[in-house]
Length: 184
Image 1 (cartoon, rainbow, N blue to C red):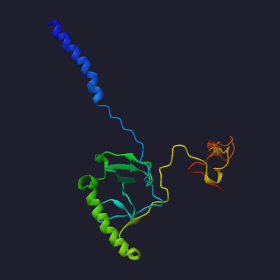
Image 2: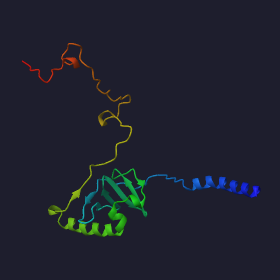
Image 3: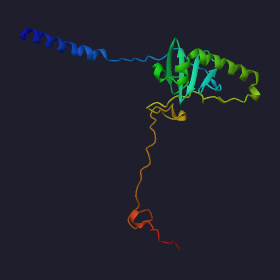
Image 4: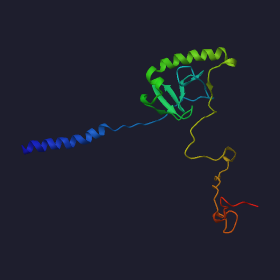
């Protein structure tokens, strides 16, 4: 009996780390090589879709809730800029219309709306959107301004330092006029 209990306890102890390891999720994002837009795509908003769709581009790209969604090689990617950097996104995080209806439904509505846009480009009454050129999320390390990028020892300017006024001076906190004080 003691031996059986010891074997059972040993099996439970050994299986616990295996169960914990089974829940580990590793997500490596290497980006999408080769998916670049030379200019910002035009986005149209077909009625009833609730998202904006990129037109006249070789990729399925959608804009919704301040994110760009790209369908590429049977996977969805998301970014804050139309040229990436892209990260793989799980189906449950896609906009509702894509989750429920699928990419083919979006493509059909996109193509219909693009035909209306193309035929009446100058008088198109639907919603259009074109992001600014190279709309990327700012990096965590801001670089020098473009006019100073070539300078090897560029240092960004120091932030302004607040210096309170001298006692008795006009900027000293103790010399501020009160609510009942009138200037003459």
